[in-house]
Amino acid sequence: MSTLKEFNFKNKRALIRVDFNVPLNTEFMVTDSTRIHAAKSTIQTVLNDGGSAVLMSHLGRPKGKEDQFSLRHIVKKVSEVLGVKVNFVDDCIGEKVEKAVSELKAGEVLLLENLRFYEEEKSGDQNFAAQLSKLGDIYVNDAFGTAHRAHASTAIIAEFFPEKKCFGNLLAREIESINKVLNDSQKPVTAILGGAKVSSKIGVIENILDKVDHIIIGGGMTFTFVKALGGKIGSSLVEDDKQELALVILEQAKAKNVQIHLPVDAIIADSFSNDANTKEVDTNQIPDGWMGLDSGPKTADKFAEVIAKSKTILWNGPLGVFEMENFSKGTIELGNAISKATKNGAFSLVGGGDSVAAVKQFGFAEKVSYVSTGGGAMLEMLEGKTLPGIEAILK
Ligand code: AMP
Image (cartoon, rainbow, N blue to C red; front, side, top):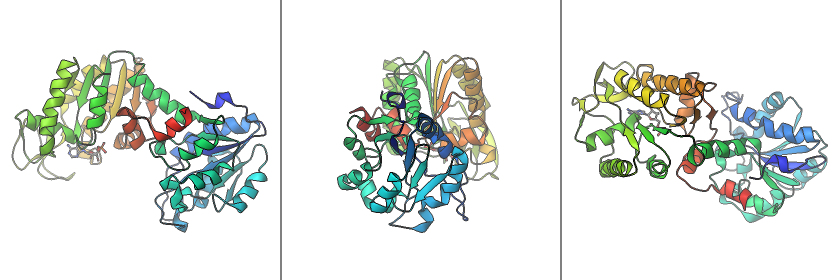
């Protein structure tokens, strides 16, 4: 794998694609700087070598040049996190930018304006990528969150650096972590797939069936399986057109000797609200007018047992509607079980959309081995796809 270690950045300009797509409040202050912290190690490596760093990123979904999406809003925060002065140029290609880059000295950092102010970024325009490529000697991709997109700055640009391109530390660690689960794992391997729908996780389930020993299914997905098996699910979330598929998955798992664990009890509610009346019932005995919004205590014990004996754990998706306090317990208990197994030596990877939010909200981020920074990108890797941003470096 091509990493920063292959290069000496002394007197070199590193053109680094970072993911600074951070949330801003109405005063344009950064409300969560996780992604900036995540890029720090790569930028510091370059600066410590005696190089300079040109940072490029997108922010939000602007339609043309919209000031609310300007990266100038985050300059102060980036500078604070990195502990160095950060210069800013209000464009990302062209003469003005090239001049700012040429004036950059060793140890200095320059942040470019939002790449998505040009539609050529998302369309993967060759000429736009060529213009960007003039801004550095070595191209470093450290943006896992956009690695599944074939955009100009994430993939196309790499062609202009045939020998001088590599992964940043963050992206390298993301790839390593997923490898540790999918290709280089210690057995038994357990994947926990929760969240809302079977349809959004089916690609992952199909790909990991050959790689894991246990699959724990939870969240809204549960009820498509339970209904397909003949259970009563009341008005729980269900994808009727995926019932057949659920049965096929169960069959395939059996044939491959993979144990599938479904929740045995549920916390049900008479409306989709934190204030709803609730009851605890078996997952396949949900009365009409009630819906399953969390898994119950028997499920928590059953899942904890599987997790305790696992050496490798992948967690994607909450076990209930964790955003509502009354339906967050199943997810919290699961997080506790994974934290405990990690403490006892298991490798645990959490990633893909909402599970990261849950892990942070409930304080598990420090207790698992690795929390991925990419939602969609992580899911696509778990589906076995080669991401354009990764392929472009490996080519
Ligand atoms: P995903 O993005 O697919 O990981 O789905 C995460 C979402 O699934 C969260 O917003 C949860 O509130 C939701 N979810 C989890 N369990 C259930 C459930 N039993 N019924 C409805 N939504 C659920």
